[in-house]
Length: 104
Image (cartoon, rainbow, N blue to C red; front, side, top):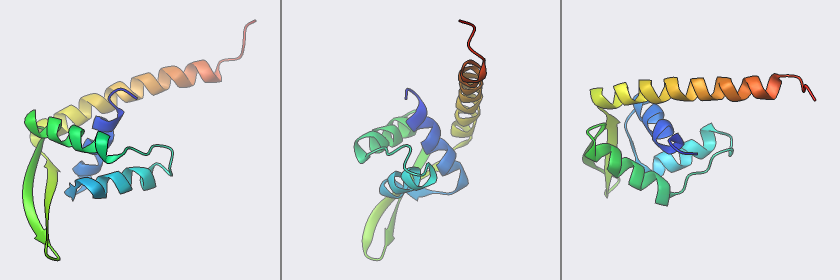
């Protein structure tokens, strides 16, 4: 699962800005419960990506509640492209092994 939280967070935030708990719920829903990243994984990923300049944060009040909304920066889009290419290479390699007939 190394790198997967970062990839998912960047991909979903590339679509639109969101706050942390919204991301937690969307990751679970989008992956049809295959991946359920808790707040203890998503929030550190958000903070780390913000520190690296891949995300920008802004505080917004909605229905009387103050939330921090995140969006992807140009640097974040480049990181997303790199992670996506890595993931595709890895998943294609795994798929090749799974689909290859046994030679025992």
